[in-house]
Amino acid sequence: MGKRGAAPPLSDLEARLERARKGVRFDRAGGPRGEASALSRAWLVALELVTAIVVSTAIGWFFDGLFDTRPFLLLVFFFLGVGAGLLNVFRGAQRIEGEARRASSPDDRADGSDGSV
Image 1 (cartoon, rainbow, N blue to C red):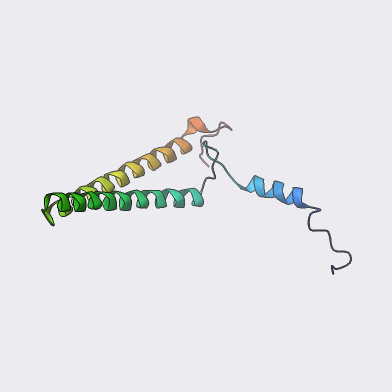
Image 2 (image 1 turned 180 degrees about the vertical axis):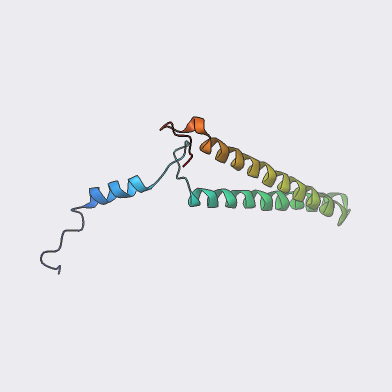
């Protein structure tokens, strides 16, 4: 059974939850900010790149079969997909950089500090 004198596991649950909630920072959208958010954005950018290439290559493969031009249209659409995917990566990086600049700008600080040490 259980040990005598040991605190029940749920007795200090509320205190532990409060400590955990205070340790998590949230961004404007209400999501967690920090490493988890950066990792999820990196995965999103990578997924957009791969998706653009796969979808455009599939379109090229379909048109090659339709017009019997193998492998010309597959190659054309593959390179179009690479270009579109890289454009998405560039735009995503600009968006992330803009969000980081807005988050660190002095105007957004609630405590009125300028962020200098």
